[in-house]
Length: 117
Length: 365
Image (cartoon, rainbow over all chains, first blue to last red):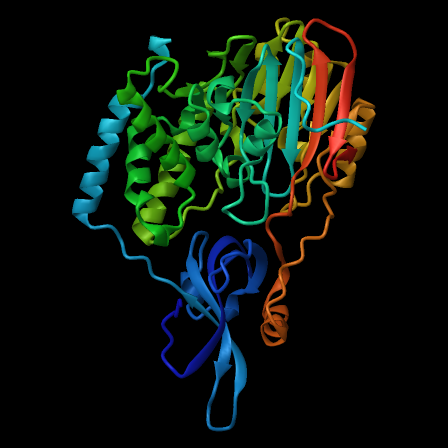
């Protein structure tokens, strides 16, 4: 079962893997992929910028988790939504070098071939 | 009632257009059992659904492995490429065609960087899948045209047995601009840990001119107008002057949008009363009412693959979850409808009337 990292007691009901598609002021158009039930198709929605935990990092392509669940403070259970901006680990220098070498080999096989026509 | 599973006669040309939403696909029978697949969309709401072209061709009992000679990806947007790797894998005899904008070592290098990284959820899955399939074919001794991709640009003829197929764009200027834009987008995603989102303009789309027997077909892809006359539709109509006219079937460009419309396409390149078909694009609510009115004034024979307003409710997930989602999100809706609509155009290769049949929600515009 997928369990996004959450710092406090949180009973997860629903999680989406989201991607920011457009930024229009406070309106953030996103695509949501259901990771609780992957048989559901993707959805589009508009979120407010203020709902993101790190609004300064929101840009086209920013990945995030949208989670719905129960939080249980002392006063009783409440339903909450968390929108957590994700961090994708950058590629290492060796990964980049390997990719460039692979691309070079591919390009030599499948590159521009107009003159071969 | 027209039958959906009856293949065209050997001397018939067919243009089948599937859509809607974030998906569009055109399947063409050029005659004598030869087929082309232009773009790809899925036959259901999930990413694991079957490509509609494969479903349709198998329904017709077409041997996809031998009968499909071209698989064309007009541009790198997910409403045009979903499932195209599966189509190409099945079409063992086909040559794959993509825009020249993708043909740089730098872009391929960046694509390779993200291909094994699920967290990028990259829009390059189909691109890498195509090259994976090409790699498996090449050692088998395949020679041109099988096994070698073609990178389409203006006036490039494409390999096809029963029809003359020509790419009308992108122009050299569009290719140069597009290669810079794509490389910058990829580099930014890799460097900043963001996903690839298709936001480059449609000016690198591949428009196709097909002549099969006496029939002429114009497939407009998503090409739009550009301020630079060396790009977009202006470049095409200028190049076509006097040599490309009389197309009887037109896949309307860019979901019928105003910016995909060029009057000289209709006056110079299409036959009067040409049969026109388009797919809606629900993210942008295309075509708008004014687009529909404009197209209807240009030809009485115009069709759309699906109602653009067809309901796409998200699935129910339980009262607590749905209640919260309804509060925190606006305009939430499913990306994909359940089944694409289908406009089928058939006509004799050497003349005669044109028959249009509508399936799965397609209707006159």
